[in-house]
Length: 517
Image 1 (tube, rainbow, N blue to C red):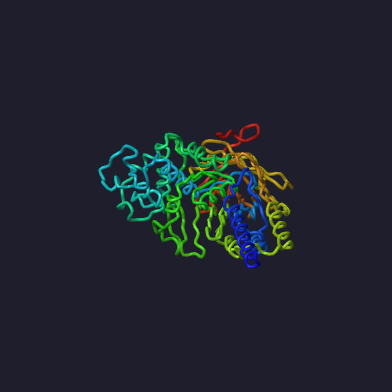
Image 2: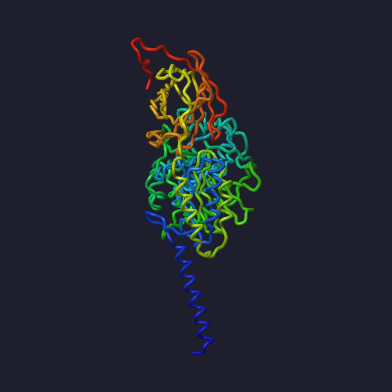
């Protein structure tokens, strides 16, 4: 054997080895846990990622988690206090992308006939307006149903739907505003109608179908997904998953719907889902597929499921990357820019122990509560109103009454909310600049509450539902027995809402009057 032949054989073997390594990376499917790697081993810069943590700290960005998977390896998995690692997080409108994925699975199983299937006929209904009969599954997926559905005024149609007796029927009864396919209008109710359609076609709840055909095969076990009065899962939002399991969804999308030996979502359908079908006009370069936001002009191109408050599952096929972000009201692009800067090569970078140590320290610090300051001075009014119950007029929170309690020199107070359907609290209030976490909020998740006296008559509360996204700023201004309330919500649900309250008469013999639980 001559040397030239030996060199050719060596080159061939090296190529086969590299191909085998690439195939192994391509064929990796996470089990109970993801495999991990340093960023440098996957062509990413730890220093650039650590810079993101500096930015978050300096700008007080309310991010909750950041997870990056490249080449099938988790290179970064961070939680930011007060979010607690291991808690399922609300996906908000990323849920729409999951509902759409389930529709794709139902199509692949021939339980739905395809994206051109008429919606009205699937529900066994007819309508005097022939345009309604022309609405297809694809029109729901692309937000072009033509139904008289409105995104403005805080998604007013969604609010009207959730206050109706039968949510799917409410959507089906809406009048037509446009010919189907002619006009894009962000319509969460349309995605709930899609959930109802998946449930009707499969003969089971959307959640049960998801457990059997999507969550189960991917190894996703911790799932919370509320349903409407008819038992239909909220197709537009409120699905709760762990960030690590959100990444599994993104990894499935990255691999054209395949997981191991199983083609869970038809590859052709998923490729269509990440193509451009409608034009929202919200932001240049941001287009819409099948409940997916797509960015074909970016280099490299990407697509994502996104939700209110900063929820993201972002997929960059050309970089073999999935990024998951959760938060309570921030712009993910600000943090995502650091991911882009960290992407240096498709090949491994030289090891950088110093940068990796810096990143590890940043991850550890992000999960820790901040150091408390000195508690603010309590005005005389704090002791006068302590323990009194204030009845409240009708308001968007469904709040009937509230009570505050304070003790001299204490770093915490207490808040009790009496809502239409439950009592919340008492919850500790951090008065030293550090919110106090307490259990058993919505979906059993923790709530973080802090507060401070702005002056002798005004107390400002921050009620942060953390993994449930909503973060309420509640300013209480007291005058005698009267209380004026100003309510805002960080992610945009509520803005400068005003209502009033009044102290209830004290019970003879001391204590506060009973409030409705």
